[in-house]
Length: 235
Length: 290
Image 1 (cartoon, each protein chain N blue to C red):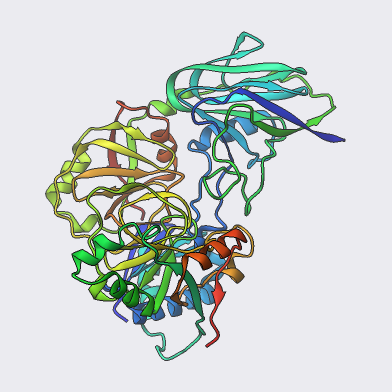
Image 2 (image 1 turned 60 degrees about the horizontal axis):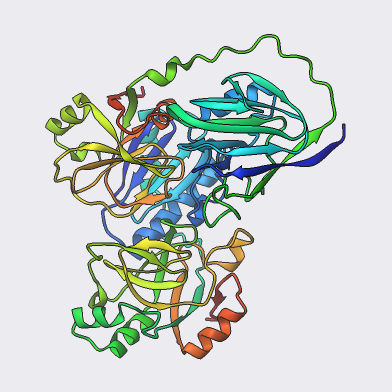
């Protein structure tokens, strides 16, 4: 593992990996995270993730020397330990242009047909790296490079709840109304944030997401009986 | 001791009135911001004055205050921003406990100095608990700010409170500090020394873009700091944008951010910064933890 450790202050440190988004870095992050909770859990208040970072908020104060020791310890962790079993979740998306307001624009930008955009987007398997931006917003990696699209220069004032969008190298779902600079390509009828049983109803870090195209009719059916949570796909 | 629920009725909501406590730490993994009071010193003060539990929820107000009617007798105390506050049309002060009777009217009018005002109520406010906190946040709690006609619950307790003879004097001096203590953030070393000096010697002005999420500073710092991948951010994280803006994240900050994190404001200084209004000046001074 190629790691760096940075101490912001006595109770806040950050471990960082090379600047890239990959499943292998994610695997290492989870390995280190588990190790730290197991070995030093009593001293840790919170561990938070970014694409290539683990941020540790501590209960105890640590020195620069402690940091070096921790770094040495985690770089020596056996890589092969497989400690997680990941699930796959299916998210129904209606790619109708009434929801995917930017579908045509995006297709034109990439010289693809709308059907091709939908096909590429729904064929992908996406990895959940962490939640951030908004409550319930999943940072997903794995967008096909044919759909990479720079964010809009001017963010839209309102992107509606459930909107599935593309921004940069990422795709994501807006769990609530928000301004945003991503291209809207569809909408899901599911609820992506709930304050109850979040752990059971929603994907965990490392899980896979697949988008399943549905018709406007199916969308209307599902939205009329709103249910918080996403469905597991049996694999 | 029997406690019965009583209501505060809001005849005028004010502009940014909400219920806050210390913070919501237990839902951050699902992208839920900490939230919580902007100025913890003032929250601690009102709860201390009322002998409340440390984390009792308080009412936070800014810009334009509310007009409230209390259904049942209780005790209240104010701290934080200096504002014109009236109890049944008589002016009242910060840092003092007031006994109020049935149907008392409390009105907060003009804000004169500082940004955030806090009202503590005997026993704390009883708004909905989500996770381990009552702090209001859009999409997480049922409400995010008080609207006209709203009610908030407190517990009425028919008991005798000994008169408060000695009031802890409010020392408002700490707000006057313009020196904001900071630590180097993860991307600080990606800036050249020249810019380190520039940022640490410059006087910055708090811009008009200030809210519970972030305070943007007016002056810009031209830079070509390399971009980062989305990474964790906290209240107090100072981001530097490609266009040179400095953004200090506040209590409602998102849990992750995509701009380089050049500084981290010290936990005490964050309360001081929170109480600065648009146009006020600050300077950063860096501290090194041994």
